[in-house]
Image (cartoon, rainbow, N blue to C red; front, side):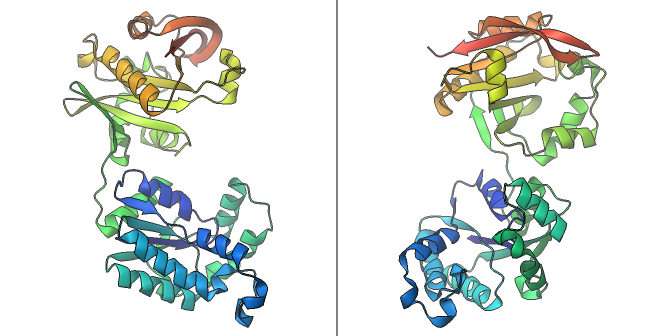
Length: 357
């Protein structure tokens, strides 16, 4: 299978492609831009044809033929996800038809958005206003009005996960949650869109909120959407399952420079991960499941992510959580006064650390 993702520069092709790739073990990313950059460096101007004497490597006949030829070689090993902006109709048809000859299961999607949306996304990724990418926006929007570039996905109001789901559904790839950790007791899997109602239920339950977020801070579906499905880079969000039943939530992330300084780690080169979690179903409290959860995630982060230290910062009054963390080898290392706003009051927290050394 080959999935080609087209659209204006900055519309989000590569972001969508990488998200789509996350739980597809038999797919790889193939970006024809890399071929273009290579040709730009190796082909002297004197051997270019007259119509190739431009700043656009797609005008090189060699780029178009190499794109198809290399895709053919790669596709013998893996299915391909191919993000590229290609708005010249002739070039597009050459590439698409070439890919279809390689694999009849070739799908093309064109991501669209308003000019203002595209320009904001370009700024968000660090582009300088008015640069070459900005200058291509009008050309792309005009070209992509041609029906030959379909199937179109309007992305102005869609999150990355929703675009990915639309593509998966169209090509017949069944969405499945990526399993992060699985043992005899627990399964920890990636959060998916269908988990929204479950999270909203948990995070509107005072029994849960007493320990996580606060009883004065209940969540509805919209708030869950904003806080837990924002595609925040570097945060892995997961559902905890016991005997295939969802019972809670865990997230982990490499801590940022601000947290390193707060915790006193700014001078260390260690890989340091933070984690947050809650068991939402009270029927599973006080059964050792929390201890198993913390131990499993700790082992995973050290083994798979190369973590040297793990940190958590429970509020000092939450003695049950602190005992659980201590059972798993975490130690109190620093008091963090008035660290967290909880139910209208800034609460003290303990910095707790697990070190693999």
